[in-house]
Image 1 (tube, rainbow over the protein chains, first blue to last red):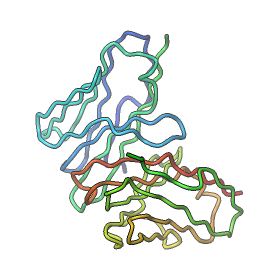
Image 2: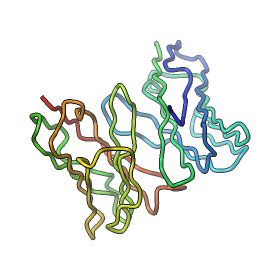
Image 3: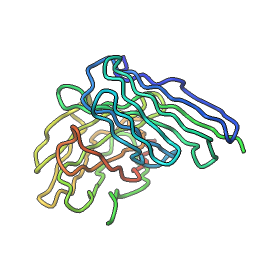
Image 4: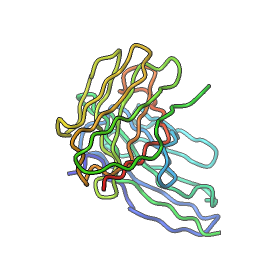
Length: 110
Length: 114
């Protein structure tokens, strides 16, 4: 079973539209990370959330952590083709093992 | 500042052979973690090394092993390769232990086992 479930699995949006990706953990979260990956390449760190209620933004990407729900959301405003890729959430859980989510593939149509 | 580098970038091996992959972390980073990424299983944690010691290990058979040198560079070895070992192997470095610290990933090594 997956410790981190992401939804949706894939997303196709028109350029300029907003979108949200969710990441839900089955275990207590000690840190939640968001990464972006272009196919077949390494991961690019986007942001890290550590406290419940924490919200961080970078350019048009905002991530929030709901500690009670053990859930994080990643919101992209006014999507652009450069946002296309695979978005992965990752988390520290008890035992210091790092888990990754199932991934969300984002396609932005110009 | 140079990023995480991995060599080689691509590798083709035959079943039964062994392979060694290399990872050079960002200067000053002491933690190196290895991950396997496949279409079916996604990204899975292999192991973490910190100060030349394996600190954590994922659920992989003993054919997968690694080590870390005093300069924090790390190598991963897979013995008796199986077709299912074909994957993108990613390494990531962090300043300290992985927990609560940002990890920076290398470009990966694409291993194909035939």
